[in-house]
Amino acid sequence: MITHLARSLFLVFLSQLACPAFAEIVPESAGHGLVSFGGYQTKQTKSLADLPQPVVARLTGHLKNRLGETQYAHLKFARAQLLEADFKNEHVKVPAYILQFDFELPGTPKVIFPAEIWLRSDASVLREINLPAYASSPDKQVFHAFKEFIPLIAKRGFLEKNMAYIIEHDEDSGLIKKGMFERDMTIRLEYNEKFDALIWTFIKTLSDDSFTAEMKSIVVNAHTGRIIRTKKSHTLR
Image (cartoon, rainbow, N blue to C red):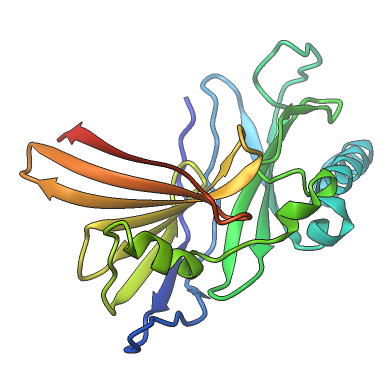
């Protein structure tokens, strides 16, 4: 079972302007989720020097091939988990190495996206990094911050007030934005494997009677600005 212990919190303030302007996001703490597997011992390191050189070399080559030199330069190693076992069978779903990175996205507010890749003992990829294949998709070099979509979602009932927000990483490595004074809006930044793209998901609580909640969500491609889907859903408390 995968459990995630660490979280990152960020604070951003909206101005008093009629058309909100967002200040820079200032990190208060940093961290990535700890992935654990029952029955397997792991150790952690914050230095790539603790990994076998051939593993680092193959990983570096793979990331540069997938991301391209430009986007690879925005990737900063955070930490790695090493499982004390040797998994050479390609059908085994438990990784030998879990490597986590901070990926800096352009624009304001500044967003640091937590990226992760799982490797087998020979450094072949077991689970691909949760970032687009920038090298083969030049159009994805463009990234739109969530503030650019405020007018778009406002037309669909997602109105924002001037307020402070907390942004935190959740257990799925997405980015969440929650209102401190009005708790009916959430914004998540996630990697979508189907579209091989980063997506913004705007979620608004329409009603909540403590037993059931009605939600409306809008999913927007962060590269093209196109709405992928809009839907309503109900959840039980």
